[in-house]
Length: 119
Image (cartoon, rainbow, N blue to C red):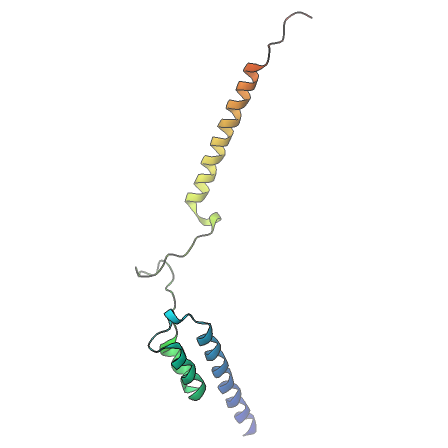
């Protein structure tokens, strides 16, 4: 029976600590249903029920992954190497740089005097 009591105490402590840290690290504007201070008091005073209530009704809603069919989700930023527009612009920039380098090289060649046929 003693081991079971230790297990319940550890679960109680884990719920209390994790819920409290999560609540404290969440921005006030994102918390649902109650003010932040009330959630902190509920978690501490009515633990573990307050912690469980925090996870069920107080935490901010998780963001829905892109492409899940909802239109309210914020678009996730795309890494540059996964963004086809960025990759396309790199190719265009490379071609423009090459064309500019070729143009300058041709101008330099035109400015140089032609070698004479005399030895």
